[in-house]
Length: 333
Ligand SMILES: [Zn+2]
Image (tube, rainbow, N blue to C red; front, side, top):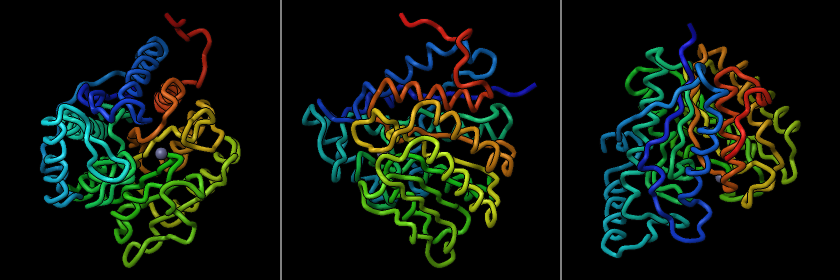
């Protein structure tokens, strides 16, 4: 019998507070959890929600120097003293709850990977907060105090759980932090499709990795206004290109949903159904190479209700069910 798809959301992730009016706010995960909860009847027997514990601090040190981790802990302490969120780094606010959110989300991501490797889950989606892909080893930015997907990828390789990890980043923004961390690493391939020009300004097609990592970075910049069919065509083409030279035994997805057409920060025109199709394409191509070992982590996505629908679409694709089955949908309310 097929093991279920796992959905993980550590409760501390929802409490990371960026302050009133910030696009990366606490309500994002509430909306996401409510969408997934409403879909549980359709997902019944195919997907399960799984609890997890916080990661030990040492896991962060796989990617981030101790000075960075201590600076984050200091900023969280300052927020606790001040009784309000404080700035940790450019565009990156933390609150007294952010330390627990970082370690809780990392713990959930680790539990997802281990569960997939041990065959308890077929694959998994982890609703992480704060997001991570803009954070380099020692420089937080763009709402990202640490880089969860990078820590998880490094852990897979360092511990021998995987030999070659592919990170597919379909957040509307280029994941400059993840690219930087693995630029010279031939064991972790970083593929990003993103709007360009856009924040943070990196991710040109000519950025292909450096040194021993030359050729294990692939960037697909897309103009504002790119629609779902074009995006999916480019995704398939890019994955085919990756698989010609790199055979992953584990795939991580930086699954931001700010490429949705209603997103206030992005200019691409994807629908939740397009994310279902993107996940299917990923599973048919890279998923075939790695025996289906796919774990998706939330990054951005700033229209909370659309982000919830897109999460359900990805979960349904991971669980092998159609994007929309009206006989299974649960009425709201
Ligand atoms: Zn983004």
